[in-house]
Length: 314
Image (cartoon, rainbow, N blue to C red; front, side, top):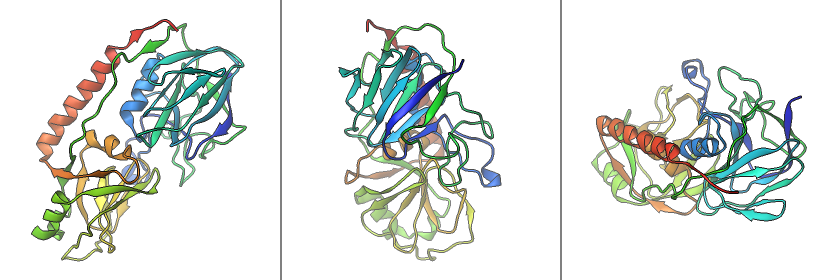
């Protein structure tokens, strides 16, 4: 009989996410997947899953869960209070959750997106090669919707595992967010580029899995703020007539009619997505070649962190 995880309380935008849905953007299907790919992969590795397995993603606040079999759980994403049967346990480690015990996940500190991985993974059906939920089009996940109290999730089989720990914190840099200029960088003159790269911007509360609106000095496109719709990618920075940059994230649309001044480098997209509302940051422009090189380094660092997970006494 399939084991089940029951949700008694659910935070905002809670959904099932894996590594994403690839190969369908040309047909208008967004990539989806975890907003913070590193935190998602580490959570899965802590419970013995493939790093790309389906887990639970939540925004700002977690929820309350029970399972009908003994499982391992891990919570990552940021600092977060976690309790099992009323006993506090650390985030960024895995812990036994016995059948019938209550897992309570509180509010994130210093981050926006959190992850709850369960040994065996979430065993819902694949849709277009992924279990990820695209909320706006009701594709994938549990009936294509955000998770809510009373929902149950089927769990995959897992071998007997020992709880594991990351050992050292998985820290990210605090410098400017890297961008690659274009594809419509020529719509913006020298003054607009000076503003974009020298003035601070702030994350705002106007965000979801589709996009995040930034606050800061307005950017003027001297060639105009409307273009013939063309392809977008995850990380595209659109600039509408308001001059406020809009960063497309995991569920972002596949085409758009605003000029795109730049694209967030893949290795910095999760860091940007995790910035709390009101936090300031700067952009820095880098070449595509350097972005590719640094992306390889970022992947190597994540692989090293996962390879260095250690068993612990729970």
